[in-house]
Length: 446
Ligand SMILES: NC(=O)c1ccc[n+]([C@@H]2O[C@H](COP(=O)([O-])OP(=O)(O)OC[C@H]3O[C@@H](n4cnc5c(N)ncnc54)[C@H](O)[C@@H]3O)[C@@H](O)[C@H]2O)c1
Image (cartoon, rainbow, N blue to C red; front, side, top):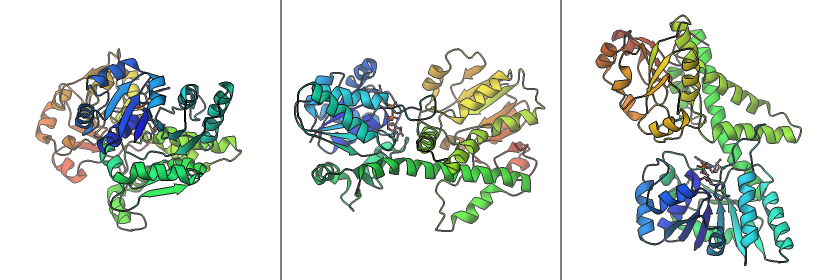
């Protein structure tokens, strides 16, 4: 099939390359000329395992092309995917300006029937807005060209985006029209060979399904973080509690780790946007408000522990920080807990010596001139003259470090572990002051 994808970010690029990999003729479009110039040369703007090779192979095979030419883009695909950003507006609602800009471009250039497939995460009712915008422009152009809108939210996870797209848990297709449902079924057939994973539903339900999934996952995390704060005050260990409840198949082990808060481009903004949608229709979504508040507070937990340990005297202190990305296997630092900690420590006059396996370039971009932030080339080099080690992201290569080396390098043997990577008893026997999340008393609770 001929497919156009508007937006060459995480979702657009992965969608484009995976659809090309199974044989479709894909044109990826972006307004960012620099990004497209790089992609044409095979330079990938993001870190995502496996993406690099797939892009190059499909470019060479002639199934994947990149362009900024909107006219060509609208001419190319029967299917016109929208995969542009929907960042939070001032009030937390989703900013639809990029989505509507794409709708406008499609309407201004459309010559024949098109299926507009929205992959961006958008509030309920957006498909109606996109349809109205396209109809209005077509009327202004004096044309009566048929088109259909499909809501096809994306559930890929950064860090395993290719695998998630290739082997999806489900493919949500929101449409009122059986003909478009069958076009989408045909497109997704190669990803669907074992069992049929396409779930066809009405458009509004499809739009809400995406928010429901993210809000549920964020709720699980905030719930465990809330309990971790209780565990600290009660002398219980949240890790043992996690094992204890995860075995219940109704609860399960996924997404029940306590930590220093969730980040990324999706959970924070999607929980806020759903809360805002509720507010706009006069409903107070109390649970969503709480989920967000608990998370905001959790992002402060590490700083609170550090500040208490050093008796609120952080000026001139040095902290080795492991992990900048909001989670492992990505370079994405959007809404990352590391940023809240870096800001708090550096405002307090401390120095942060940070390392991340993939997010160093992104950190340089975000902090071009924070003199108190030193970006280091290895986990070991962050330890030079440092007063404590702080772990923020659970990258695999932080799981079994050389504790002797850490102890020898640090000016005092203190570890603040925002991801509960180590065994408190082992840390104690090695002579560390070890602060984790929700693991018993004497943890400098928030
Ligand atoms: N990142 C994820 O893990 C993920 C997962 C599921 C869903 N989503 C949703 O998918 C959407 C896209 O997210 P993302 O992370 O890929 O965003 P992104 O910021 O990485 O990429 C968006 C791209 O769209 C481009 N763009 C903006 N306006 C454009 C236009 N008019 N025409 C063409 N390109 C344009 C931007 O230049 C940018 O390259 C969002 O709604 C997000 O919530 C993201």
